[in-house]
Length: 215
View 1 (tube, rainbow, N blue to C red):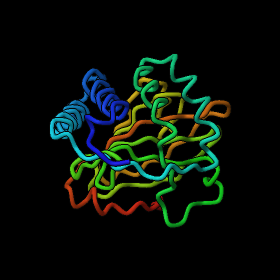
View 2: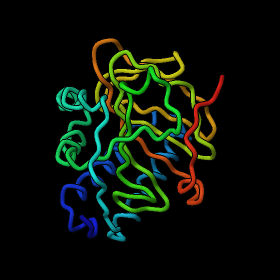
View 3: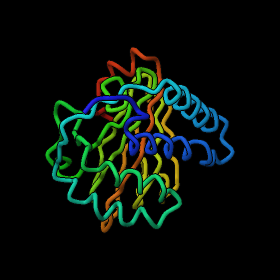
View 4: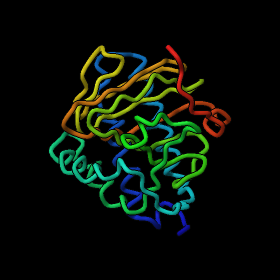
């Protein structure tokens, strides 16, 4: 189903709730994180003002999506509950993917992502990528990096660690500057749902190659 953002009410509010998270989320006193939050919300404001095209993909599931219901239920008890509710409204329209040419067997049943905005849609933008990552309990997402892309995750449900240097609960932001290697691990009992934003040059966003990096 095609059209523009204003014609897709649930998707319009999904973008609105993303913008709210990046507007009111704390930078924890970090100037680079504050700058990133501002850049994401300003670009999202600009994209929404253009009433971008929406091209919904054929919905697709992967095994980890069995955990999505639990993640949404738990996410409704968190500071980002309003965003979680809007995700629930569109969950049946999401296309969950791996994104890598070769995915480790141990990861195949424990990970997937769904893009929400980007060069290929569903909400079309050449200057910003937004999406979701779902991780099962007991998941180790191997060390990887994104060339010339600034990335942030907002934890919506569950708890996780990055590079074994901290534990992040719902409402937390994880910031990864360009080319920074990061490894994610989740707890043993609950799934983790993350919202993410990628910012960078349009040619980088359009041609980003997702690969795992050796430490």
